Image (cartoon, rainbow, N blue to C red):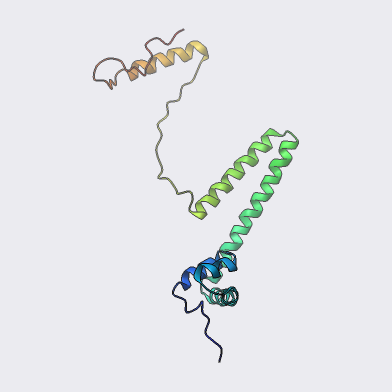
Length: 166
């Protein structure tokens, strides 16, 4: 009868299994948990069998496939960026940078490094500048309207200029 695996009955088996799955050097795992290197080498086979039998193995394999596709796409886009930079095609380079940014954002969301932020509403004022004079006229109107809000309880806000120059 075969001797039971020392790592399988070890008190810190979960940590040993995790270290094996994380692809840590087997000799370091053995040393850390006071086991022989050959025990960890044999136990690695047990861990692989256990993972393969897991009902989540198919989900993990599918996720690995998606991650591989994302990495392939990133490699392709980085190649396009390199070519665009060599050709001094700035439009293509910026488009490639935009795609790389999207891929990095996706990778960060998948890994949990980047959390989705709650959506915010931004209130922007659109100014149509009809030449420099038109711009200054509109700016003066905005400043006059902003003075209605007196954050200091009285006078004009120090953040708003009194004279906009002409």
